[in-house]
Image (cartoon, rainbow, N blue to C red; front, top):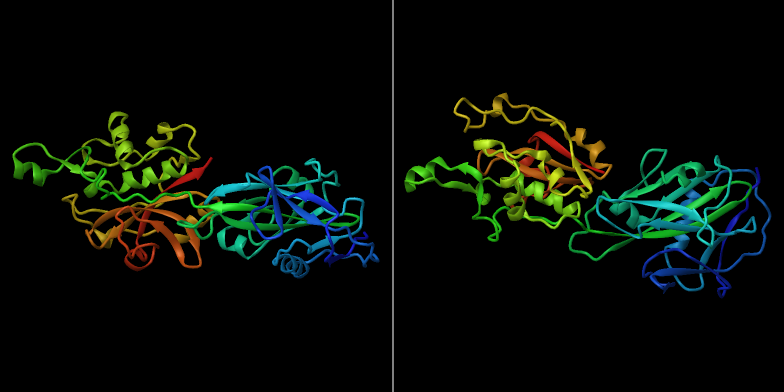
Length: 386
């Protein structure tokens, strides 16, 4: 099978195509989209049959890493020298997915043999903030058939470093198709933070009654019924509020507490939450709870107040990996050495720094399942992406 060769040209633009990319130098924004300017190369001799390997793709990405209005990588070999790499939606939130489409300049799917192989490669930013998911194992380089691409099975999953506090970060995806000739295109998608951190001790809701969970010490002391407050017992509730907010619902721990109190969202006098309650809070949420826990949880002594660590079994952190890779959020029960009791945190990602968490207790030095929470997950509940 013959394929064309690729090379870089540095000429004035004569043809242009949309890329739905971002504000990179050399990219001209038009009507909410962007246009990438390219120059058609002169034909070069066909090379011997081969598949463009990752080293060549990396060279392509390197050539495209410094954007300027007159420089672009061009692949020659057919009437359609370039194709569009359209990523939809063009801005995704952390933990969400985007689908990659390969189209012509009229935004129509390119007609190629379904078995034609496609190679997609992420740039450095893309690898920082997530990975490609395709027929092969997820990673910066994915190879799959064009038929699978047309079916929307090449996806970008923003499950890497969470860009909290940063503007939308641009991620480039380079794609090379192999048929009788080699064709090339590049697209971008913007990744932004989406998971808002809530603290259970926020004064806006810290003093609110946590369901109807009676505080026996304060009740005896004050001579009247006193309920626990969100600041004291609302860690699980606060995790659920973060999941609901990430799913697109306008909610916080205070408003969710009110709704759950009126809609059977708590488990009676023990103060436990009904983890699936938020499925009914907003049916349009991007997340759905799991029916069961993973792990047996912390055990307690007969007084039901003191944690029995000796008879409690932790779960393997790696058992969370398959869920996190698909953009799930995980509520995990840990042992809190500060309170010597059970505590819930929200696991949002796995990265080179470990398992990133949002801790509703808002301890400033606890951002991963390390340190105070090392080897301390006893069970977890998964909120899957719908």
